Image 1 (tube, rainbow, N blue to C red):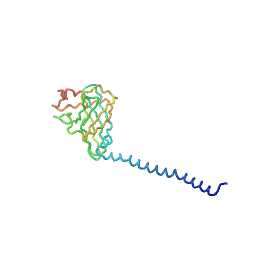
Image 2: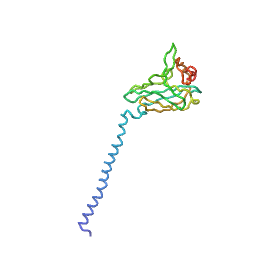
Image 3: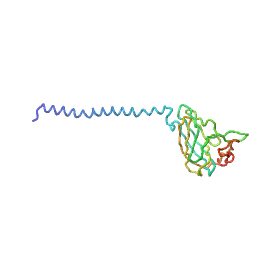
Image 4: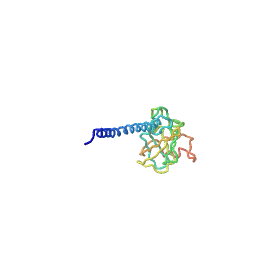
Length: 199
């Protein structure tokens, strides 16, 4: 037979063994809570001026006018998800030698295209539409044919130096035959009118 003293020791030891995991679990929970708190700190980056440009500016419904050579145009809606205006100052694409920011204005009684001075300004919590007959991205010196269904990559550069990348799908479009502003020329000496059939 076991002595009463031995029985008490077994009961106490068993009780400690049962309580020990709970103590460890509580410590683990505390440590985990600390980790969660630390990992949540990057959320503050969303309010930082150097936050993700993709989160600040999004590009919706992008598309490109199909073209065989010369130049063509790209369109989309730029959406500003911040409380401050965002300015797109330049753009680039591997599909073109260069990309310019253009607007369509009335010149001598007809609509003409020219570079957009100051870039595209997207108001706080608002949007800016790039569309045929209005502001658009002009792809100059195409590096190859842009066929319907092709996906064309773009990079927008914002005034703060950050960039936003997106892909636009090419499609057929009959329109956008505005002439270029007289007097504007390319670096190679060609006038916009020399290549206007590419738009």
